Image (cartoon, rainbow, N blue to C red):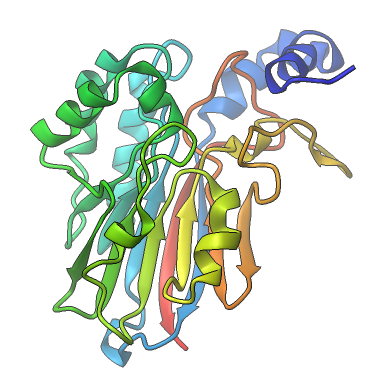
Length: 275
């Protein structure tokens, strides 16, 4: 019998860890237990003056009905304490209703990175109403990298983003149209497993993704038992993929059933280092 992601999580929440669930740990404690994961990443051609440049990646907020606005506010406050140069948002802002973005985006607008916040959409944003999600982000001044790229910090870093790869209309070439040769390049792409193709291109040095939630439940010795489509191969943390690197964030929110075990929500603090 094929086990679905939702089916396995329901089994975990209802039976396998019934004692923990009854105590509220997997439903109330760990889903709210924000962790800051610190990662130093070396990029080729990074100017010496950018050594130490700090990026915070946030992903998979899934505001309502399981993940609360209070958790989002806590995420923003903790992110601001890190004093990032740049904040990158890798999709899935909503879960069941696109209008949730009108509660979430004003909180995201309180992020205060030196060089701004940039975003891409995820599959749940498309499955609800991408136009509404785009509107909510735009109203709060959060720039959506919809198959486009931007040069940052006096053209010392190129940031590109593609539309959701599962349900959107991604255009990799359009995202890299303004890239300059020898400029270190970061790509935002919601689903991680496309890294094999993107990083093989040679123009991307680092891909940032989310989508998997780390599996939400990770069994000691086994890891995540059930993972989503396009998040089967790469699901948590830093990977070397060919000549490039991929980082997969575990996300802030959850899908139902709303459980986490050995897989707390994540704020990723990335410090760039010159290669």
